[in-house]
Length: 556
Image 1 (cartoon, rainbow, N blue to C red):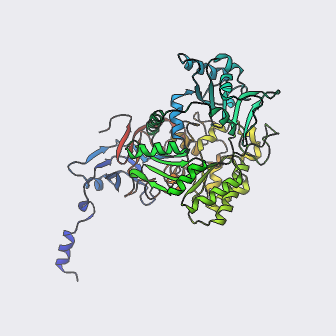
Image 2: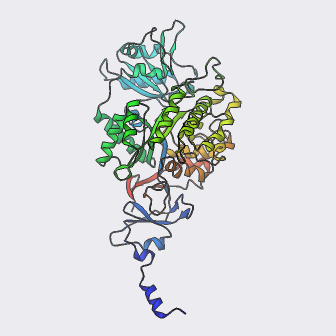
């Protein structure tokens, strides 16, 4: 029998909320999708010191209220963990915000008109840059030639990057500035489009782009700093709390680290090291860096490239393009190089992520990874394939067998579906954008946008993942709808699965006690509204570390 003194001791013990320090912020009256399987949907949460202290009911959360606690009534709105883009280009977004936007242009004439409008007042001889043209959206889907662009802008070098970043269009002044002529040879892994007389048409694909880009004046460090700040602000506006930056140079990474150290990166930035031998050697010697400057910067991944892009016919295919029978795409890097880096990196504790879009590109990467991991067996390497867009049926189970993560961009499917069949033929479409087939092997599929290739808004990828439809909800029933994700999977693909792909799952990716208090308030419930209404959702506020970094409207 228990003595009365025992109950007296129990009454004096600190219990749960009574024993805890007061919260800094308590959020109530919300539908909170935590992405924590132990408590998936709650109505309230408490935050202390930038981390989740409690999730549950409002009655429980209010027990953590102190005299200085802010209580936020969410007005019945939906809250999800802060979204992370698993494959994007932060500086590229900042640069695109400054250059001529060519996205959505429906003709080459419209592209030229936009550039001409921007060129007013620009001194002769100054470079004009733009991005976003896509000949697949024009009536004539052949690559353009530069004659009309050169006539319209004869006095300024003009260089316009294709939407996918894997091709560029240069006018005659840019060709002169870069000293590119009919005698210029195609570099390995690149192609110069030419006239029948071998003159350059102005279009440069994959590694050939460097022939022109090396002549473009470098931006200043302060210009890059301003672009990074602008890109972060734009990302937060759409509910992103972080991204995996898919390949930057050492000078850019050094700048990002300088900014993070100074508190100028209110973002979770997982930055990959571009494939430069000197930069790779530097970072391997330094060792992996995780959660620097209060969990704002990670440097622990090397980004490689296997092939080009499908839209510019640079993706490496096992069989020729259906609409270009003499072409099987381009290998941007030798498979032996990918294998060598994938062997070297894990010895220093680094992850490897390789761009691969075509079925041949993906197979060669998987082969290189498999050979590397035989040499350096690692239990938790989390090697990645970025895009994994077109897969041969035989290669789909190899991702799970090798422990390789396919980092995909659902919105690419809805951008490409109009013309992918012409490129590939119907048979190869069965392995195209096949995230359901991959998920059923037991692996995760982190989701992203590849911005500025696509728009920043992560809900475009959420909608594409679950509906397989474009922003106008076409086609009815979804394109190859058997490859859909569930909404639960789609939410995970933008929260906890990117965290896993970045070795961050213990720190972020869900609204679990102890994790970083990164969350987004939405004006509608994306988990229950009709699919056609998902893209009408607005971000009300974005919080990082329990503090608002973007607010559409003032909240109490």
